[in-house]
Image (cartoon, rainbow, N blue to C red):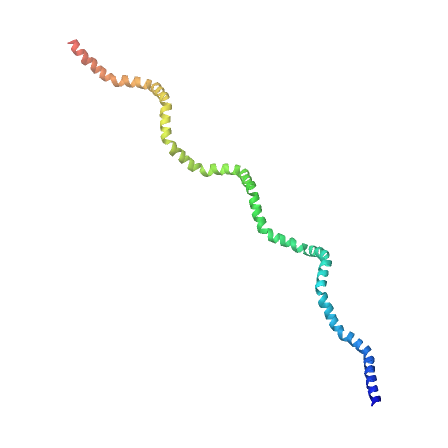
Amino acid sequence: MIHATFLFFNHQKSLFANSYAYDEKSVVVNSYAYDEKSLFANSNAYDEKSLFANSYAYDEKSLAANSYAYDEKSLAANSYAYDEKSLVANSYAYDEKSVLANSYAYDEKSLFANSHAYDEKSLVANSYAYDEKSLFANSHAYYEKSLFANSHAYDEKSLFANSYAYDEKSVVVNSYAYDE
């Protein structure tokens, strides 16, 4: 009985001792998958920060380099409507002057040609009353002299011719009573 008890305890120690190395390995083997997960889980936040921090300068350059062509197109496309408005707004004063300067000679001719018929009628209609008075007032002295000068010879003849018959009769009539 004692021998059996001794063997039992000895066997227990032996099992413990023999299984120690196995258990150590077992713990390592069994915990490996856990530790992998644990390391990954625990280091995830750190690694995220580390990757971000270490790759920041590189990523900045990479993003700038890779997006250059895209950004160029994007800027051109997005700024098109703005640029159109900007060009119109900024060139307005210049265009006004340019249009005026370039079209001056053309407009002068165009205005004259297109308004000629209208202006002729307008001038005649608007100046009629004024011109009537002006012509009469300004030409009065001239016309008086002209009428008198031009009609003098005619009037002399006319007066003489027209009054001849009257005068003949008048002389006869007037002298009749005298003669009587």
